[in-house]
Image 1: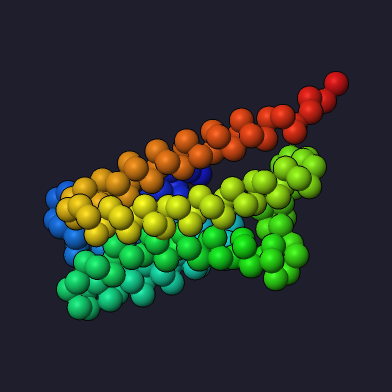
Image 2: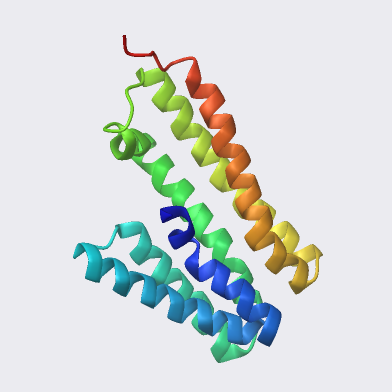
Length: 177
């Protein structure tokens, strides 16, 4: 259920685009992200940093799209978000000597440091790849194709990547007896 909730603005963006075009969809995505944060705040009293970052990026790039009536800005939004995630993970590792993936997930699973390092660098590479893939689709295909890729391609690639992560990590996870 959390997965669908996290995709709430993207799904509404997709639906609004199909019925009313890119500019209405952009406005809907901005409003949906504000609503999402409001709901999280109401339910938990605290909003994750990454959700605030996502709000800032959709507001800036979506706002520029609406203000300038130029869809280029909204097409750059996923790339900026993906590359920011990659930069944060890489910066944590290279500058702070801290594996942020491990910090986030260590309570859910126990892995040796080599596995945490592989997972961290895999996510960095995946986010870098996703940013490039978004730009390739945005600049070489129609807006309609880009919107479809944003929802279905992004989810499909993420799902495939998470499955591959599971296979990679399976050799490090020991069953409790």
